[in-house]
Image (tube, rainbow, N blue to C red; front, side, top):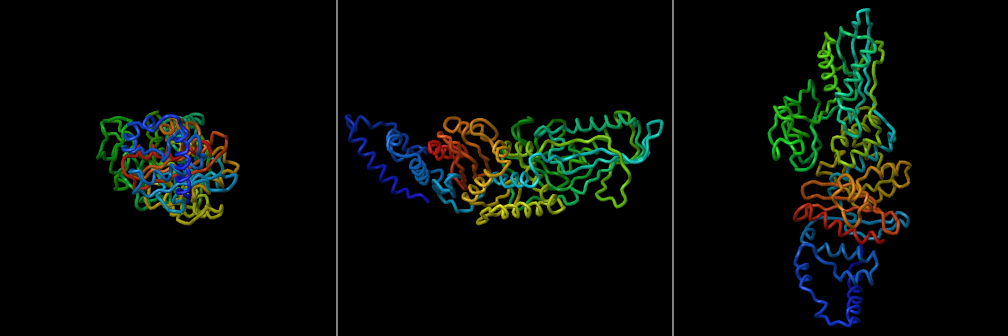
Length: 489
């Protein structure tokens, strides 16, 4: 921790010398604006900005700003921690409560997405295939089954990260049947994927459900999904696609979040069992298109004696790099939780969140993550039981700079004043120089990432605030103020 007393006393001596050297008297230097500023929540630095620029180093200014914030009404009773670190010298430049475990909110996604990129590679893709068994006769009748083979694609049908919509995928599947000359299906549409055998039935502990301006996802296995059956119980500010809605899912029996309300009783929701929805929609489209299907949609998780099959169509997801970019830019909780289950499946053979947590924490131990104070409960950061220290976040982000995918990962982070969840922060100082993941829960605001200084250096920082007073916008302004002098380091 920095020695603030040393900096403040030295600044005071230099400041007094600076003012005594001026030809004007002190009454000219005094301004009523100073008292107005002093009484506002936006407290001034201990010395004037002229003196700061004249006699104090950038490091001293960072330290003084942090010290000033300790008495700020918004932060003085909060639990908060801060570190700014130089990866070249491997030294902490300035810090406060750097070893204190704090709720990280969505900066938890840094651990989840990096683990996925490390284990799977940024060019990894998920495949969703349409195959058929049996034979096609001269009349175009398929005497056999259609198979929808899923692989756990977290972006399936979402339009996220460049993913196709369900309609586009179904259109491609129908085209595959047409190319094969199939005009009727005398059999079932079978969903075959072992990935969904371990779907979770509830979220991790201590997850906040009703929180404005954040994303929430439904949980549990759904069968025969029909979004029109979901019961809307709360709406925010009218039936607009830009508003937030909450509903009770009959599949999970819990209150969950919906992305938009389409009117006429139709609620568009996130779907935890995407292949089931795809297969049911595919069957409906085939029948409407004049291709009858005599059988039904049925899951078949394992097959001891698989039929011989031929591929009709194959859909590739966007790359993992694209999905991680979308996840970090938009702080997408559903994609982050899906990535957690994906790494669990790849390493341990099932898609439970528990396996995902074991894989992530195991990976962190392997790369030398500082595990002191870490409590990793979910992939997205929705759980208030998550904990991490600012210093461990900084050391983790520093270690990524030696990875071959560092450039791609850096690009995935929101940029201050320009993109993602940082588009409305750092509109002045720091614009285009802060690359960081944000985190927001009620009375929790966090920021962790990289800082490009005016001299061209790259610094690493973590700033986490829990249990603050006032609004989240007030905390954002104080975050900007703390980081501003670091731009001159």
